[in-house]
Every structure is written in C-alpha cells, then in structure tokens.
Image (cartoon, rainbow, N blue to C red; front, top):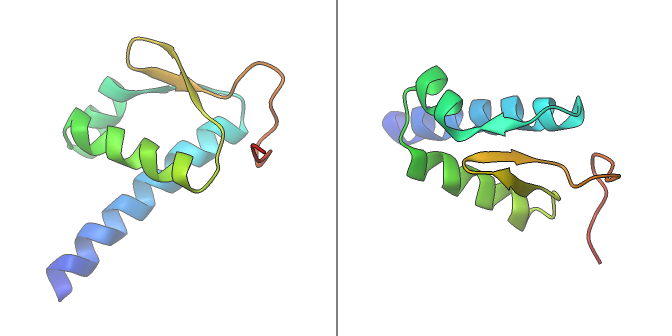
Length: 79
C-alpha cells in the first residue's frame, strides 16, 4: 500500500507543478518534465490526459509542448 501511495503522491506533485505553470501562462514541455521528475514521456502524456479529463483546457502548441489556448483563462471549463 505504501508503494501505491508513493506513486500517487509523485503523480499529484507532477500534476500540481503542471497546473501552476499553466496558471502562470507558461508552457509545459514533455521532455523537461521527464527529466525533472525522472518519468517517461508516456507517463507525462497520461498526466496531461488526466488534466484534460478534469476539464482543464490545454492543447498541444508544438511537438511535445502544451499550453492554454490563446485567450483561455485558467480553470475555464469547456462546454
């Protein structure tokens, strides 16, 4: 059980880090997250999918680069 909690704790840390960047109008680069958190690009893609499932509006703006759509505000939910 402890190992499962530690894995989830690391995921929560990554998600909060990404949300903070998006809220500050910055982009998220998959490669940078992989290096910072020692995870695979697939793990980062799953994290981004989790944010999108939570209705957080993010979009690819380049290869492996994600950000808020132009004019979007943090926590602006899609219809």
